[in-house]
Length: 189
Image (cartoon, rainbow, N blue to C red; front, side, top):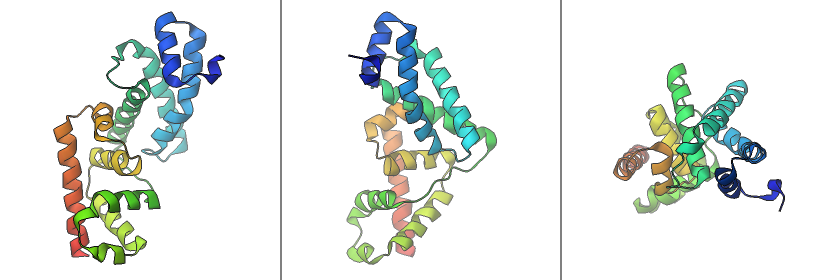
């Protein structure tokens, strides 16, 4: 089987066993578009996205031996993306921004408002978008990142633990607080 036909996880295992430079080159080549996509969810400036993508690729290569196998290799790389992006946001003191799309709205409806009365169905998508936007403005960059990972990217809690490096109880509590804020905003609306 050709290298370009192998999965990221297969390439990781082969490189880990052999250390062959051609394999790491192919692995990083496959990771680049995935990393770029994830970084672009945190950062909006094209040049900065490219810079952070390159930084994550370098960190992945340098810290390759630190991967302990507690998650998939790809999830480990996404944790590097998350931490690097959050650090850049903190350094630049920029707000995390992204477009609220129908996928996020559906996710919020399914997970947050499942116990709220049926009036939610009467809310227009635009109204719910305003409620979500208001919530996002009240969150810190770290909380916004968690919101994105959970509701837009729909990562399960177990992956959020690996990506953020936070405990399960901490993540669940932050998500609960976000749900409570959304519910209260909805009720005020």
